[in-house]
Length: 379
Image 1 (cartoon, rainbow, N blue to C red):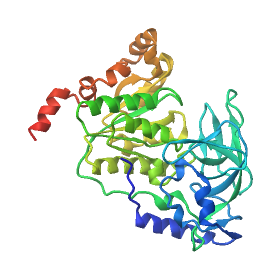
Image 2: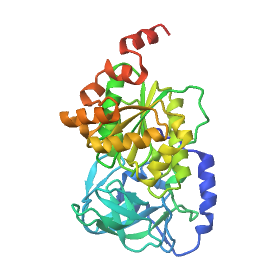
Image 3: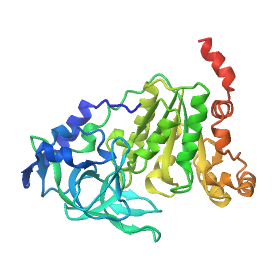
């Protein structure tokens, strides 16, 4: 379930914040033109029926929605829709995406542009940014030409934060919270999180799941839904297309709000994926935060090899994180597993164990699934 509640107070605060940006050229946006544009996943919470104008001279802020034309096709030849379909792009297509930054060592480093000049589609989930560096093994980015920022009938720019879900009050119910972090992009974090969700859900637990940092994309969310999570959220629900270059205190607020929202949904256990590697600025701040650490009952670390696992586990233990195990790509190598267990002193847990409905709850809750089922039946 993806929550749809919007905070009126948050919308009012952000509308006030944007009210000084009414100046500059404006053009009418016909509803049929907005409806015909290919819409990105990052815009999924936005009510496009509000879009009536195009601002053509404003400097963009992170989260602003932009109508853009595809100029050339590069790495991202498809745009992920709000429903998860990957829509093929063609030169000349008009698309609606959100401005933001990106931190992806295996693909791009990209920054927020300071004008509405030509820029790049930095992520298939719908991020407009200026790519500054790319991995040697990936092709150039898809190039786009912004036409204008979307504005409502009063000229207020449509920004993702205007459509964020309500920040919940601190709940009385406190589910068990397990985080999954990793050495880097593509270390196996999402697979680990989804496998754990599957094992917990199959045991009869009501599982909530979330991706608390990263770049807006539906793929990770759908994998958590498919694994059996009853409530799934990510930072786009809190009004951000990406957490790259976001104020670290805002990253912390978003993560804590997601935990509280999952608690309000009365989940038994919440599984959180923390994107990117430990050296990424926002990830490092979040995992070093005492407030975030105090909400965690356990952390699984995904690594590609024993050396990465050793360095990462040491980094996390120095910050007092409640380490449970190592998982990720290293589990595909029996020798790597043996080295990792020897150097970290932690168990290495692979997919077969994580999806096991007897092992998963015992691993996370120290209560066998059968005993837990009896407890539930007895009230």
